[in-house]
Image (cartoon, rainbow, N blue to C red; front, side, top):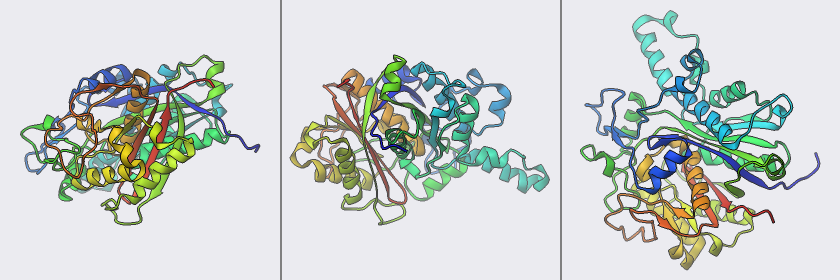
Length: 417
């Protein structure tokens, strides 16, 4: 294959999360500080220490998908297919017999079909193995979101599923960037999806004491970088982007939100759940993203932080940013939209890449809500409580996952130069 270094642009955006389905509703919600976190309604949470989450309570897959198909999909795959459908519509792109082999899918999930697994385990215990659904395995496995998007759209190009916990969505986008740069695809439907707000999912994270227990005030529970943060809040949904080779996008007069210019991926090699306390792995991922983008640190305007609202993540991410940017770190706008959407786990990187694209498009930095009591160890400009109008030419989106996975992408306002 002839070496290439294609430019890659983002031509379609589709968030599906608690604050909105579709880019306009989502963007209007996060720049106005709307919060999607409430008491969980999908199952009885009375016995749980954490009883809140950012559920999508108005989601109906049959508004977008065939009823028969919907019944054969776990909720995480439903989210992904709806987001993929909306993203293609937003990009004004149709998969046809002529372009199908040039269009790929890279959609990951940190956990996959947990609800299906739980429900079928109940069937096994109560009714025996003969009552396990024949759809258990194809509904549960994490790669089925990517597989079903290919089946739904007819995309026959590269198809893969990334599974790197909370770094999944960003890894999927970054890996897709590299594929298109190398000429292995013209278009990739990329991002992450997750639906882990289930009895076992909630219980598992609660037993780790990773979740906020601010049950009496759900909208105030996710408070990244705030001194009174007490854990993250689970979210669900999908974030899907259409990544496209520049010339292909220009030829079809596609809308262009931003150019994807850099990607960093590293490992902490430290601990299965805790980030490196020196922030070294995260800092290297940020630096890699800048280096591959050929962007100096002082050219970055905004960072959409991983910002989970846990003690260690927020402190060590702040440290990593300061390691890379030095004094300029204090001139950056850094915010965590998880304060409103909750933490979408494997879908977080997709949702937050969309937020970063829209920050570039509109020159607005969304806020970190619930920032009330500054933490001396978290001393950057976190865009407290209200969005700010600011020119955003270059933005980064950070994602860090259990296992020590670090992923960062760099985006830039598009100019055809």
